[in-house]
Structure formats: structure tokens, C-alpha cells
Amino acid sequence: MSIHRRTNKLFEGALVKEALKQSFVKLDPRIQFRNPVMFTVELCTIFMLGVCIWIMNGEASQGSLLYNIIITAILLLTLLFANFAEALAEARGKAQANSLRKTREDTPAKKIFPVGEMYVNEMKVVPSSQLAKGDIFLCEAGDTIPMDGEIIEGIATIDESAITGESAPVIRESGGDKSSVTGGTKVLSDKIKVRVTTEPGESFLDKMIALVEGASRQKTPNEIALTILLAGFTLIFIIVCVTLKPFGDYASTPITIAAFISLFVCLIPTTIGGLLSAIGIAGMDRALRANVITKSGKAVETAGDLDTLLLDKTGTITIGNRKATHFWPEKDIDENVFAEACVLASIADETPEGKSIIELAETKQVKKPFCKMIK
Image (tube, rainbow, N blue to C red; front, side):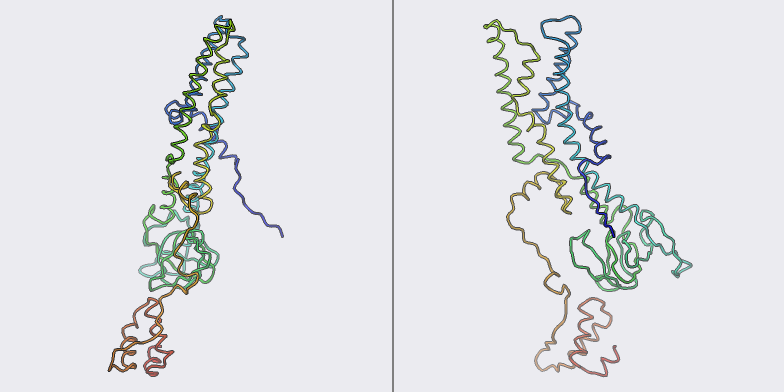
């Protein structure tokens, strides 16, 4: 028996195609201006393009046309590479949102249609996107719950790890305060009927999609400091390259514009500036693959500074239910009378507290005939 495991590839065809397209879109100076280093490289590329046109019009002091075209092409490729790295990281984040959206829209739902005022067992499989508030659907073992709702009939064991991260299956049943189910979770056993309780676009999956799509690549404090440092280095190397012109004239050594620009781009931290934005987005994507939604790069940076994280994880060590364990009557009040009053008050209570009170009365053998009647 062979097992096929789906992995997240770094260079998926669809992501690469979208990233290549965005690489050219990001050449817009209004976008590049946010990154001083790459904006400077873009200005150099435009300037070199003008030099090539100048040489084509007869200028001979700037070297051969082929040499200048090669320099221009290398600068353009440097820009496109930096844009591609950032666009690929962004595309991976968008792919996560698209995957959640596909789960929301393509999950089959066994919708139960009403006949008069009664719901019969006639069903029709429809996409989850066609479910509306108030519709009733059936879920059996192995089915993915298509929409948020409330169980109106049955009990089932449900795997909610994809949504909540809880590795242990949970029990959901009709009545009480544990009857709600979430779209995207999986039924492991038994069968339940569920009534949709949310309007289209308001489910838990929709909120997750909105969080992923609304995640903004805000600059972190460290990134802002590094950007200022890189801008300072860029200014210093502009001054260094400009001062080479007087020295070249003094030594009677002509220096071409292509040589100035090539030296300048090699001196400034071009690689760091080009990959700086991609690093932040890649951190957000890495957290997302671990089912952790980060709304900004600052959140990723903050998470990296944490040494210990404490979570209130009720249900892993404890039973996770509120359960009555003992009757504590006031003085001069018979325990049987007190227990009988508690049972009477809990007959219609479908919560874990109400059910456990009746179970406790049976265990304590309080008013046996009365408990048998309740049972």
C-alpha cells in the first residue's frame, strides 16, 4: 500500500506564475519608493537605459553599446529578483486564503429539504456555498461539516484540530451548551442533523479568510531601524562614487557612467535591501503553515522574542465538563429532600450540570422510586 503525502512546494507553478507577473507590477516607482535601496537601484537602471539610448545616437565616450546593455540587463534582473522574492512570499499567503475559501465553497453538504412542516429523510448533495441560515443538513462519519450550525438531532465525535488545534476529538450532541459545530471540522463517528446558524459570509471560516487576507506587511521596529541604516549606507556610497570623478579627471583616467553605477550598486547593501521585505512575509507564511495567523510582521517578530508560552488548555488534563460531585444541604435540611429538589430543578436542564445532578442522585441512591420515575 502506498501513501501519497501532499507537501507545500516552494516553487509551485501557479505561485511562480503569479509572482513573475507581480515582479513587473512592482517596478512601479510608487511601490519601490518604500524600499530606499531598491528604489535607488531602479533609478540607476532607468539612468543606464538613457545611457544606452545616448550611445545609440552616436556617443562614443561611454564604451560599447553591448557593455552598457549588459549592465542595464543585470540591474533590471536584480530588481526583478527582489520583486519576485517578495511577490512569491505574498502569493504563498494568498494561496492559504484561497485554500480556506475552496474548503468553504466546495465542501459537499447533504441538505435535507422540508415537506410541509416536517423534515423527511430525502436529501440532496449541494455545495456548502448554497446553504443558507435555517437550512438543515446531515453529517455522518467521515464527512466534513460544511457550515457553522447547531445540532438538532444526534450525537457525534468530531475532530476540531483543523480549527481549534485541539488534538483530542470532542463530543457534540443536541441540547445543552455543546451542540454547536464549526464548518471545516470532521465527523469521526455516528450521525447528526445540523441546522445552519450563520448567514453566508459570517461563518468561522469566513472570519479566518478575512484575517489571512487582511494580514498587512507592516514594518517591524527592527526592519525600520535596518531600513534607516541601509538608507544611510546608500547615501554614504553615493558620496564615495561622486568623489571618484574628480580623482579620475586628475589622473587623466576616464570613468564611464556604467562603471560608476556598477560600483555603486555593488557597494550598497543591494541584497539585504532586496530580500528584507520578503523575509517578513516569509515569517508570516511560516506561522500560517503551523495554523497560527499573524496579522503583521511585527507579530512574527514579537513571537520570535518569546521563550515560554503558557496556554489555558482546559480539557487536556481535566475532563473538560462541569460535573456535580456532592450534595451540600444547609443545616436542618434533609439530604434526600434537598436532592429531590435539585433533581426536580434539573429535569429539563440539558447542560452538563443538569445531567450530572440527576446522575449524582442515582449514584447516591436518593429516593430510589423517584429516581426510577425520572429515569
